Length: 352
Image (cartoon, rainbow, N blue to C red; front, side, top):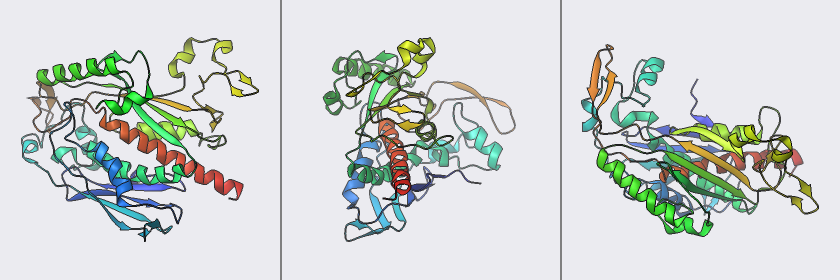
């Protein structure tokens, strides 16, 4: 019972609720003697935290990480690393009105069905705030990957129906939405403002690119690399779909179009998305993640209460217009955690 842990050798367990005292993560299996400071973790958390950008929740959380164990004199010790992030800017009052009502698009009904009890304050454990622990763990995973020069880049390629027409990786750092197309980013920001004024929300697509991943990561048959990546990404609350490489486009291809030719210098295209037979092939890993609109909106919605009586509600509180771009860093973190796990598994197999 549980479902709060993820990974095999590099294993994480997140804990805490949106409006509780704190939340965090315990990381087991991190190799020893890796240089790691609170600044390494903090810079990742600072990108995910709320209160940034036009479409972000006005909730102000510093998300200051506290390292409780597993680090000595600036290096990992090989023992469990425990990271704590305190909740500081909590206002549970807007949720009291709806504590006996199931909010549409939220996990209220299903948590009640499973446990017979739920923390209604901010969504409790089902809140996107849980992902702070994932991002903290992802920062540790990235330190492991850095030693192998593996790089992970998440960017916004669609938001509110607006798609990127060109990709300039350098542009990602130049706009708050982390979009690789400057013109598309401007249109996306306008779309966010329109949705905010209507009291509505937006969905979109995040692309995650992994560079310099060595060939050989991934374990057939049930632990295929893309299977673990898909599970990791689908475990993020707002994610409703994952594509690898050409994704659903392969259904409309011929075999002669889909297969990636191999030449003396390597693969000549990458519709496989860097993975064949569940094992990395040394080319860039390309993933795309479908992100649903934030379900907490101020427009009137129909639902029921615990007695299954019809109710109309307008959600109050402090909410994002879109999970993008904050979710981009969560996607990066989950990809990093999977790759760190499989890298350690491969090293164990090779006797390194």
